[in-house]
Length: 113
Image 1 (cartoon, helix red, strand yellow):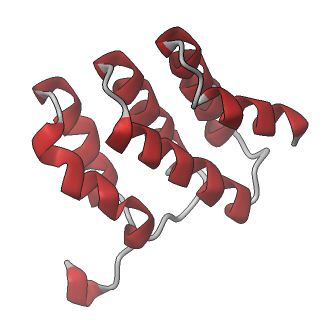
Image 2 (cartoon, rainbow, N blue to C red):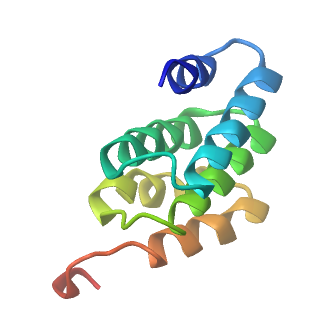
């Protein structure tokens, strides 16, 4: 978990290249089975926060790609991902598709769909 903590910390680095690499590395973790449900939710929450607040498009896209990887092994609640919906007006066209996929892949109660 020390590596995961260091990678999460790198999401706040001043250098967008380091943020981009950190997001991709977290995507690799989410793609496999190394993380339990709580750790996956922590990582996804941080990646969502990065996406919402990040000014660099390629970093936002890397974060969204990483979040997409989580759906291979984890069920993510809509509440964890709702900030993406609020940020959609600030997103470039090329990353809106990722966001729509992510929001559609969540496990929301039927009354919210």
